[in-house]
Length: 316
Image (cartoon, rainbow, N blue to C red; front, side):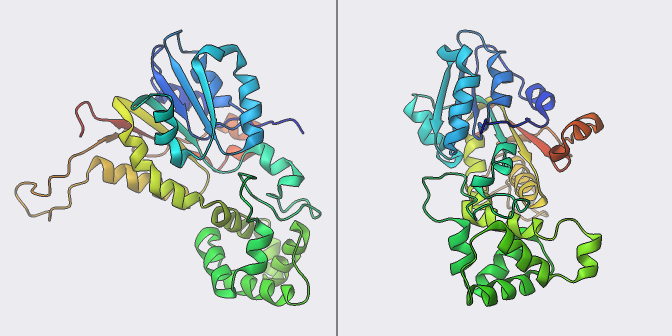
């Protein structure tokens, strides 16, 4: 299957990066190379681009798409939480810009073998973004305790029927191992009242999202590495982060806020004594949203939000 993915907020991200022709830029979620291509074609011979992705298919597709910029492009198969190590491997300590386009790609959703979608009943429960990882969604669904499943579906799917869904999963797997997307979807449907199923979106959407996030450690990786990435920016360098659900967006917003105003002194203190200095500023006070035209052309862009942070001129 050909790797296809339509990059969202492409023009907006490219604009906010403030690309310098001789700059160094990193895409931590390379995908098919859509954002990367727009960055690379604005670079001169002195510019450098580093693409990172943990998905082997994405790495192959991006390498092909960016082949015309061969001299200035480096691609690494890794997780963006390893960005500092990847850059050090290329002898780079600071960069002019970073892009993160979070979530799952169109290719991953559309390829039944990847098991990300609830729309193909025969698809295996896989959901791994990196197939070098052994533990799959099938393993998670069949081994997590009822309490663990409840926590995952409640926290990462924000589903008010999380408790009942977890209960149905555990009861069903006592009879037979749950192995396909269709089997899991039917269990989820049975756990949600018919009236709710009729009026809401697809009943399995939230649970599938929750399992994917837990399996791939998506929020933990974002929470644990975003501030460090800001620290890799040169003065006035920018990081652009595109999120697709409220959990991701909340993490990005809070970390950007804390990096801009890190002071922990009580508000009534006349001067700061904690010694924490600002790393820069949030360029976008509110998230940038896709245009109506883009949402019509690409329905998967509807939930996308872009936030941008700029490193200070003399931040520590």
